[in-house]
Image (cartoon, rainbow, N blue to C red; front, top):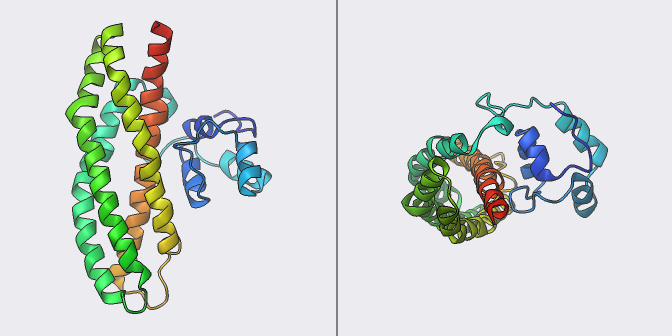
Length: 234
């Protein structure tokens, strides 16, 4: 693993050390949509301790939680990994988490009225995430598969509006989680939280982590790599 330096972009850092995304998420640093910013500029903008950040990140393992070094994955591998690791899990997890959340909020809405707002936010977020995934599977990913198997400028040009549109949705999806963090005190249960609410908060935080990793792989690695091929071809 190469040493992380302040002049590296957030995108370069997360590609080199995938688990650094966890640090950025907790600090509300959007490495998905603003991955071209350097660590130095981000530290100044957010009032963060640059030296501490560098130390923490450089001490991390370079592999993701699956033991994969993502910087060595090609576009076909990333595409399949996103579908297997994230799309299928999201379709299973979101409806179940919605049911748990409804029960937990019902138990706590008197003493924590902000959870009612969090529940409404989750429902909007769930619908938008599933719609995003459906759009990808229905058109963009099929076109990507065709292009990656048979690269040609016509397929590449046809892909452009789909990739631009999907990547444009990433910012609003990320924003949902910043709002959810604010409403749930960074997913922290209070002393009187029931087991059900604690479980919901844990699963919401995991959903955030998986979604940011998903969007980073999708936009900053897969879509950008294909767009760069397009630019080279023109």
